[in-house]
Image 1 (cartoon, rainbow, N blue to C red):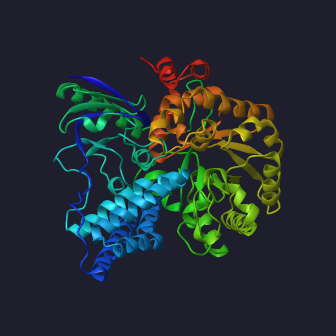
Image 2: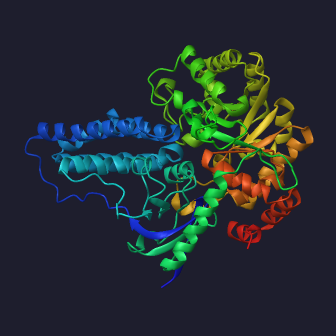
Image 3: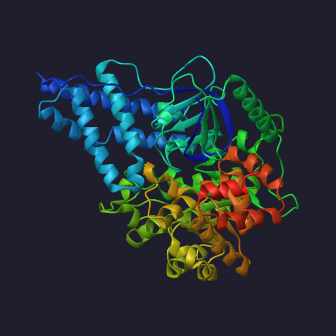
Length: 559
């Protein structure tokens, strides 16, 4: 019987095919008292180290920086001394190796969920580590993606990075999960691969293997029982859309030539290979024809390190990005870390609520030398590459913070200084912030979380974090109006920018640039080219007036 399931669309596009579910985690038999505690401990720790090594090896082969960062972080968790100590405690209490791993992971999982924010995002990683390490101990096959022998749609409660990092888009047509949110690994990696995806889709795990379904990643809808002929027609249309996007070129513009810069989100120069920027000889890949980098996340250089990267290492990394970026335009975000995204070398104490603590620019309150060294390195790299960087700080909250950051950057010769708008306080004071700054970039992921007081990893609250929420759009509108009044650019670099239809709403609100993952550039460019500025403004008006995201999509969505 046909049924429509609804969730949160996190990666646009349509697909249709048969669904197949991820295998469940390895099951444990009844606990067995460990006869030889030393042997049990050795077996358990060896399994965790093997899991860590396997994840590290997958990270080295990852096709992009985003995937590599996620897998490296997961590998680090598997080798964490605190986790190993918990395993030792379990063995000391008489548990066998498998049950000691299971209990230790469950204990740390609860702690991560209680901490919320970035820590809660790691809970799914820990589940995957548990499953892999237990499989090693029990001699079972590693959990992984099914292989039905033909293209299919992958369904799971949630997906771990190790499962999704090397998915072949010609085989896996779309991703559907019962859990997750707009910033879950499933969402991030689906966008990086250009795969349609719907998360927090209640009931999808109950759809039987082999069932024909259609997926609409923009609407967040899954229709079951559609039939093979209907699925084939949807796939033909999706293929035609992809071919059309592959030839999409030129700067971002509406149909009446209103300019909108289309920029890339990256983590390192490795994300600016020929498949993204195009082959220099013109004989290789054409690239996505972006107009620059709108968000260079510098965290990759700092992750999982006991010591901060040195000045020379940072200069080399930043210079490589300046030289590789399309048109030389790069917007760099300074280190976005803290107690919510802990880095060992920072030495920050644990906090009861890390998402509301020392994070982003606030780290400079206790470790000012980290920001100073980074700004020095950015300035030197720009001089070496002959670039004019745009530099912005994360988690700016007050006018005073903006003024202090701008002063530090300009003292080093950096002339384009901005801030991320990620908290309502910054959005509400956007006009005053722009008295101190040259531009604003709206991070819709965090702005949603703080506006709706909703943990972005809480699956039951995923609807509150839908970027079509009118309250979020109103804050974006206020920021854009502040930019227009000051004659300064205001962009969006959250994943909301990657939704082709929502992009028209954002432009209608007055946003001047959109920054996204490479596969999203062409669909967004095509969507803007099909809408006049007046139509974009109409879309913005009706979206702001909608009672909920579903109504907003329905009012804006073309027939």
